[in-house]
Structure formats: C-alpha cells, structure tokens
Image (cartoon, rainbow over all chains, first blue to last red; front, side, top):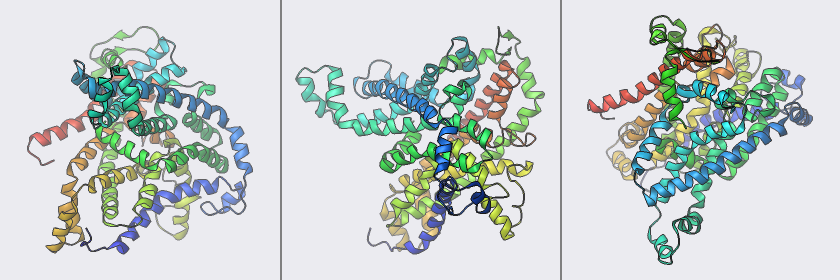
Length: 275
Length: 268
C-alpha cells in the first residue's frame, strides 16, 4: 500500500472542480434566499449585500410551510413505522425461519419491485378513486409501503443473515419464543441497520413527488414536495421567496445527512444494488 | 399490492374508458392505434431514446473518472464523498426549480456565461425546442451522477491494491491503470448500473414535468408525461394504460437486451 506512488496534487484539481459543480448551486439557493429582490436582480449568483431574514418569515407563512411539513412528517412517520415493523419481521422470517415458499416470496418481491410505476398508476388511480382512497393518506401510505418494502426487506435480510446463529442459540435454549429472539436478541444488535433503512425510507417519502402529485390534489393535504411545486407555480417569479421555501424544504434533509452521512450513502448505494 | 393493479392493467389497456363508469372492451383497437396511429407516442419514445443516449454516456464518464480519482487519493476523500453525494439527496422539485433559475438567460450561470461572451447562452435553454430536452437531462444528471460516483467508488475500493502496484511496476500509466485494472475490477457493478439507467431512462417524469411539462411545443414530451396527459388531461384512461404498458415494455427491453448479450457470450 505504501509502495504506491502518491499522486494527489494533480487529481485534486478535477475533483475540486467536480465538488464545486455539486455544491455551488446549493450555495446559490441559500444565498438567494437571503437577498432582497433588487439585490437578487443585480447580483444573481453572489453573496447577499444584507442578510434579509424576513424572507424566511414571509416564505414560511405564504407557503404554509408548517402545515405541509407536518403532513409530510405524518407520512414519513407512518411509512417508516410500517415498513420497519412489517419489513423487519419479513426479513427475520426470510433470514432465519425460512417458511415454505420463502424463495417464491423473494422472487415475487424482486419482480414487483422491478415493475415500473407507470405500468399500474393509471388503473390504480381510478381504483383508489372508486374505493375512496384518493386524497387519503391511508391510500398514499399504502403505496409508499409497497414501494419501499422490497428494498427494506432485502437490505434487512442481508444484515440479519450475517449475524452468527450462536448468538440466538443461548436464548432459544432458555426457551425464548421466536418473537422474543427477534425483539430481545436480534433487534438490539442490528438496530443500526434498521436506522439505515429508516433514514432511506424517510428520505424517499419526504422527497417523493410523482405518486403524491397523482394521488393527492386537495391543497390542504399536499405533502411538502408537491406543495413546493404548487408554491413555485404561483410565486415562481419571486426567486427570493421561492429560494427561501426551497431551503426550508431541504434543511431537514441536509441536517440528517450531515449527522448520518455514512448511513445514507451506505443505505442508498446498497439498496440500489441489492434491491 | 402491486400485482393486482398490474394485472388489471392488461384488461384496461384493451378498453375505451374515460375513468368514469364502466370500461368498454374494444380488443386490439388501442394496440393498432398505438402502433400505427400515435405520432405523440413515437415522438415521446424518441425523446426517451435521446435521454437514454445522454444517460448512458455523460453520467458514466463523469462518475467513473471522479470515482477513479477518489480511489487514488488518500486525503480529503471524505470531503469529496459528502459534497458529490449532496445533490442526490435533494428532492427533485427543489433541484428542478433551482436550476430553472440558474439557466435563466438574465440571471444565474447562463447569464454569466453570456456576459462573458460564450456563444449559445443568449437564449433560454429550457425554452428553446432543440435545447430544452438536453437542458433537463443536464439538470437531472447534476442530481444523479454523484450517486453513481459513490457507487463506483465503493466497488473500486474492493479492487485489490496489489493489482495497481503490479501494473505500476510494469510501467502502466494512469490511463492504463484505469482501463486495465480499475474498469475490469468493477465490471459487474458497471454493467448492472448501465442496465438500471437503461430502465430508468424510459420512466423519467419529475424533472420534465416540473421544468417544461413536455413543452415547448412538445419538444420535451417523454412517455411519462404523455401517459399522465392522456389519462388525466384527455381522460382516456384505457388508452393511457396501454401507453403505460408500452413504456414498461421498453424499460424491460433494456433488461432483456442485457440478458441476450450475456447469453451471446459477451463478457458483461
């Protein structure tokens, strides 16, 4: 390893350029959110002259941020809870108990997770309307759970299967039920993988646009991403306010990403290869 | 959850149905319309193929070079990892809106380039028919390619260092080490992602809808926006279902073509 000639200086030039390309637009969004409209017109991509914090107060009220963020938090909470509970149990079953038909279930999930949304979203929309699930969080969460479960189950299963069986054997000897083994033995040592999956699912739901855009059109019930879309359709010409709302929408995502950076990258990268 | 609507898809695709009332079974009339009589579908499909061509090249060139660079340096890897991945976790609506500002001819990057006198940036890239699709692809790629980079970086980190060392002892230069050591080392990941990008290219919706809604003059219409418009704009739910089925067909064609190439003994 040490024998390798180090040649960092040259490679740092393109890499720095690449990261500027990634970060600078986000910086522009933040900078513009603090400008006055006049300042923005004169200086669209530099630092603001004065920090106009009042943009945030106006944007917060105009976009009904709190209302729509609460909608999304509810969706995130419901989806993450259901996916982790059902997905965790399914993963445990597939990794350890292996009931008859386990392989069939795996193949089935692989196939349905490969089916594109556009194949079934039109019939699903009219089915949902028929049964009263349009503009209904239960109907939306049901779909979010279906869309996120295969990835969650595959990832959790691959974590659980790597845990040595000896760890459970002592508990089984003591007469613990299968459920006890899962909750008292496996969960405490694999909570970090559950956290990874939970974070990825939460990100997916918070950012989700397409499904919510089709299934929810009641203004009151719009989650954050679709409400931002509606906001920029109306206020799109006011870039300072639009930027401020944009920053508020991405702030929780950025915050969690900086805290759990490794888990996000691992979860998203592995999820796409395995799931 | 997903399988039942998928099956009813097949039936509904052979009906005339506005979405209200009962679907009227019409057999293969829809299929004939799709194959011979739907210029919009063909035009949208062509845009998806352009999209595919863009996404099978640009993101891969960018992310392979960045990932290789990252695998060769020792200091600052964490900083680059975080910053390159950042755009991927942002919601599509915010990214699209931000870039619509940046590509605005009177402000942002393009305005700046225009002031510098760089040709081609004096007009709205998103508002001009022959540049709009590429502008959207560029924006979607800004959000996507960092993800691909980290994916390749993780794969590259599993390539044994000894291989690079022995290549270096044999006098291989930087490009040769990339071409003959790194690239073969991550081939399974690379091929898998080419296939996935092939599938995704037929399913794009968010960025196109938020940025142009398929315009100007239908120049950025893709299958996703077309299906949406047919079902919820023209209220032709039965026919939209068939268009969706056609979309899924092309997406899976990407999957199948990789399978065939592999059977033919291509080393992928």
